[in-house]
Amino acid sequence: MSESTMFLVGLSGGIASGKSTVVAVLRELGCAVIDADVIAREVVQPRLKAYQQIVRYFGPEILLESGEINREALGSIIFSQPEKRRLLNAITHPEIQKEMLKQVLKYFVLGYRYVILDIPLLFETKRLTKFMKHTILVYCDPQTQLARLRKRSGLSQAEAEARIASQLPLDEKRRMATHVIDNSGDRESTRQQVLRLHARLEGSLDFLWARLAVGTAVAALGGLLYILLQHFIS
Image (cartoon, rainbow, N blue to C red; front, top):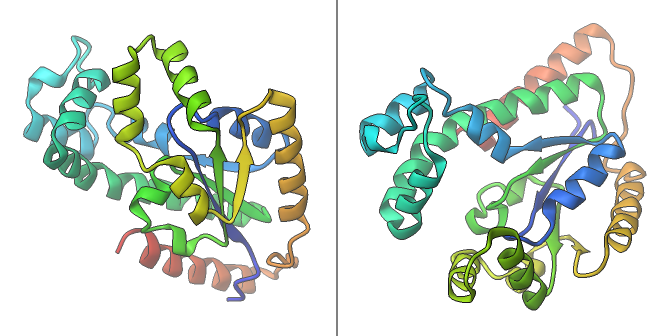
């Protein structure tokens, strides 16, 4: 299968850097965006495999009265205990990646030029960056990031700084990204940057779509499935 059929774009940011603003513009443009956070919430719904494992290892005290997982209670546990965070990741990541794979294949069949994978810890884990043709960082300066986080969450200065410090610094991620959207200014400035980047990706020679005959399409889909399974599940 020619790798020019479709390419993957990794999108990430930092807490309160404004990634949701960028995603909203991309969706307005009709881009295919797969949100890892949304999938992460879906795979831990009651009765699913990841839910059962989380309750087994973390205990029923992390459940709400409805039986759903109390994300705040679980978040406070893993925030202060790195080994528990690793355990949670080991439970949820395979399920998240399987669902992401399904969605990538759906967009492949629909003929999208590229698929954006919105992954909060894309640059922290580094595991998936090598499979992205492009990576995008939504950036804002540290002072703006801190102010936005405090305003949004009602955290104290120390609490907000601790949350930001738990992630890789945006300046470090900036050096790792192939494209940067600077969201330090107003929404219109950010929007214009997204429009320019989208136009560049749409015109990319990385994509050369052809109307495939049924047999070729099936073979290509099988090839992509094999490649992505190796990338995401292994």
